[in-house]
Image (cartoon, rainbow, N blue to C red; front, side, top):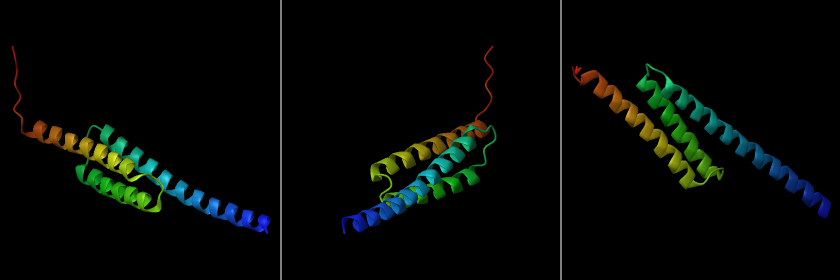
Length: 103
C-alpha cells in the first residue's frame, strides 16, 4: 500500500517539475530576448513591446500555476517596463532634441 502511494507521489512530482521547468525556461528565454533587443543600437520598439506583452502573459501564467510568486512576477514586469520606457524616452529625445555645440 505504501509503495503504491509512493509511486503516485513520484509521478505527480515529476509532472509538476516538468511544468515548472517549462515556465521557468520560457521566462528565462524571453528575458534574454528582451535584454538582447535593449542592447542593440537600433531598436525596433514595436517588436520590443510585442515581446514584452508576450513576457507579461507568460509571467501571469506562471503565477497562476504557482511556479513563481506574484510579487516576483510584478517586479520583473516593472523592471522590463521601466527599461523599455527609458529607452523610448531616449529615442524620442534623441530625435527632437537640437544639437548644441559648446565652444
